[in-house]
Length: 306
Image (tube, rainbow, N blue to C red; front, side, top):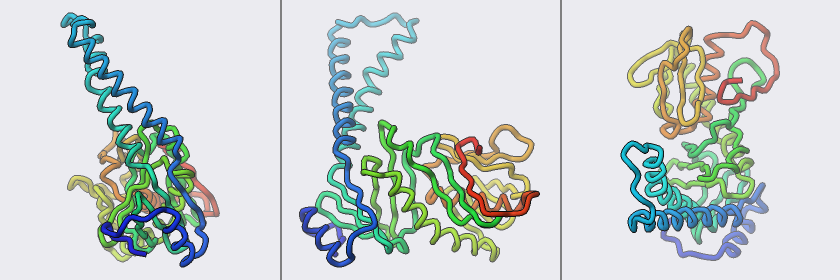
């Protein structure tokens, strides 16, 4: 299957038939949910139209200019005149861009069909997964059969269905090609979990082995070493770290004995966030071994670490 951007556009039926003829039936199929696209598009249009009407009424003085001291009225004007149309256009762009996409998962990887173009993403060739619009309360799940290391770690994406502006996962192949999978795909949480598990089982052991061998590992904006981590050229030993959490759009590193974060880094800057947090989990467990004997268990962590 030719997955180059210049390949001639074809219909989904022809391409799906060719893919399944070669590889058999996929493990799962995820296509754009038209209802999710339509209601975001409609909301976006309503926001743009409403903002245009507001501008008309305001500049024709049907809505009088408020006095300088009326800060709340000025805030409403800014929201109605600037934020409203920006949000509306963002929703329209998100809806249009997400149309006509299919994702087929296989044991060896996945195929993405988008607007007549087909791209193959073998699991072994995916070097990075980047999260966009990760819900603040998305739970981080760690499964382990022994104290070190975790067997699997991933973010539960069930809450992405409730995000108006959507969420997404951007996959990067070893050759630099990227594809963004939006949350308007049917069964997006299951697809996201599969992607995270497949990439974690390939990337985590390699990075963990490097740390055990004494290597320094760059994981987005954070650098891990056997002795500790470095953020913005500031070093902190593992033994001095209380915890590493994700709070909204930030990754926060807490030093023992301190209530405020020692360092903060944006989630959007972190590639393979699930692997980064899995590595942090393993290194902190190694530096602070639990008192009880290790056993088979599953951790399900929210943003507060509970």
